[in-house]
Image (cartoon, rainbow, N blue to C red; front, side, top):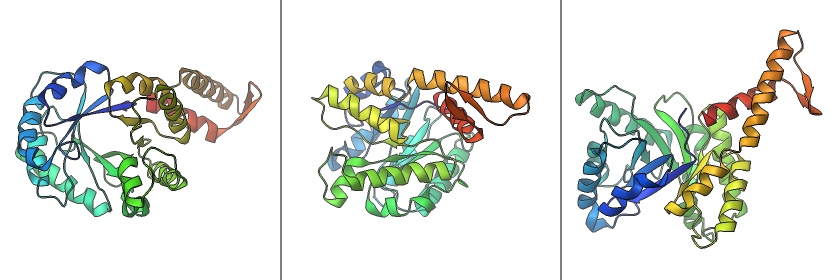
Length: 284
């Protein structure tokens, strides 16, 4: 599994930011062709991102294309499928059909270019009420290319008229919906949206910890300074140590014929064991 605690977005129309995006130890870098790029600079952004994807650079690189319904989408996707592209982020996902259509288009491009079919991952960005309502259908895991989902908190807040940056109950409902839908479909744990107050490091750290406690495995970060906080918060070494102990103790217990045990005063049975395995898998 690919660890994505921090997903740093770089605007596709800024050569300087594209060049520097690999310097900040983010688990994933996203070359953004959508919201960060004004309408008049879409062609320029595609040219810059095409060049960036050819750089001999290690790490996970993704491209956020424009929405499937936009006039930019086909040109974005044709440019973005390369041997160095780890994944495509599809914004404004509102139905399973959106994912199926894009999956088919990526397959066609991979085939024409002699790439291994299925190697480019697809991440679905759910960011409005229609998308949240359709999550049980969107997340069904018969689509092998679908790697995980991302909750677009900023657009979701705008869609519902909420204050951006606040954990409003409706945003928490969306968070629970995407987490539960992902788990139900056996997808990897989803990613949270960005923390937009770049001046408040203390609140950012607390929000990352809270986000992790909800069940998110990472988040979108808007500034390089936010990368270390996300990388720390979304993998708690104490949690991993406990998960290792649970797995070892449970497996020893089952060898002796018992399906449950007490570890440090806590009851451990198969569901707890499976949760520990998932925690270790997400951190691998």
